[in-house]
Figure (cartoon, rainbow, N blue to C red):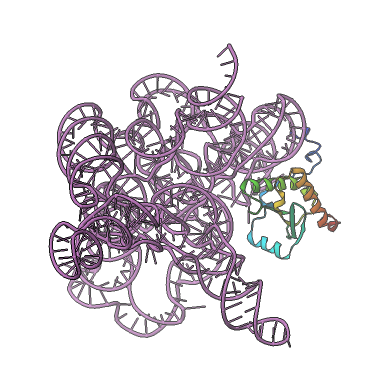
Length: 134
RNA sequence: UGGGUAAGACAGACGGUCGCGUGCAUCUUCGGGAUGUAUGAGGAAAGUCCGGGCUCCGCAGGGCAGGGAUGCCGGAUAACGUCCGGCGUGGGUAACCAUAGGGAAAGUGCAACAGAAACACACCGCCUAACGGACAUGUCCGUGGUAAGGGUGAAAUCGUGAGGUAAGAGCUCACGGGGAGCUGUGGUAACACAGUUCUCGUGUAAACCCCAUCCGGAGCAAGACCAAGAAAGGGCUUUGGGCUUCGGCCCGGCGGCGGCCCGUCGCCGCCCGGUAGGUAGGUCGCUGGAGUCUGCCGGUAACGGCAGAUCGAGAUAGAUGAUCGUCAGAUACAGAACCCGGCUUACGUCUUGCCCAAAGU
RNA sequence: CGGGGUGUAGCGCAGUUUGGUAGCGCAUCUGGUUUGGGACCAGGAGGCCGCGGGUUCAAAUCCUGCCACCCCGA
């Protein structure tokens, strides 16, 4: 009876599915990465940098990166988890057919979920993706 | 109470909501979908410093040289450079801690600068008994003796006292110190203690070396398989030499087996780009093992034996997060990547034993 | 994840094998030369030899732990 208690957040009752990241929505090919870096657009904010580009598919693909500049593996994992959780809450409002790369800056250390989430929201707003769709 | 020292434990818990990996079951539009359920990082997962398992190099073989590692004794272990218990040495008021700790009377090398001299020494100093010379009955010069004193140095011939002497010297003696040999006692042994004989110039082997013991190379990106794309074609000629019963055998060449030899395995002409590998993907390897827990027994201990119970990650751009509440308060170092045993390094909280100091009873 | 290498003056490098003096080039500073500058000439300063222990009388060098950077392997 999950749909009963989660009716406010989950869209099962209203017909659309719950947002989960499927495996095909993970960006992993090396050529796609260099293509996005070369010809895609980018938006930077205080804690994250967002790259994006149209991919010609009917769905979005996303990658979360934290380089060694961020810190050791614990800090890198923490950064990616915060970014992924933030992304999960806004991803279904984004237009379909894009590739995204979300990169952690080293300022992300010691930051709370609230900080990272608002930073990522700010970056998405500045990217004007939603206006482009309209 | 303060300081120190040793050993051990934990690594927030519980509940609500959303989210993630994997196993299993069911459904399925077969999609790396859905639902349910179980489970889901560490004491160091780290550094990659050692030791193994496993895989490939055909087997992992022998000898030699060379190289590497270890190095008190006994034990533990699959093994170790690890661990345990002892011995010696050093440090600390103590509890306790550290210890690459074999051999320098097998040989070679090195010891800068300073200093006269660093396997043997005479610069200053002391003496000149013996020998030679001069003046002349005592001095000077030569020659020679001397390591007690000065000075140099990290290090200079065992220390103190007495005898002795021309002056001195383990030259002699007393006491003390070091080393080697022998004997005895205790101990499995390292070693300790006692006696006795001889002896008294250093350090360095984390310098070469000697002695004893051990060591093949790479590493899961090892390696195996699957399907896909692409290529497996042509020419010159008779294809290492010999024998042949046409199966092969002997010799030779090339290559592999970390170096050489032995041994062994594979291959055998030339040319045309000239050979069979390369690219990206998937599956396996991939977690049940020197496993974990409990009890009993043996052992000072490391550890071992027996019995019972139990299954606790397996990702592949890489799964543990977000948020709310309660507990007095809530966290440092930090994330499995083939698997184990250690070492080292990083680090929060708590408990216990012991030592020192001060005060009180 | 695994394998290998390098850290010496502001920069680029010797010296480490065989332990005792830390050196070279460029840059920098001072003086000379020039009307001035460059070039040239002469002189000087600048180093806890990546960090911590150990061996040794003595360590950049030998041994042993850390740290940082770089390279290679699908």
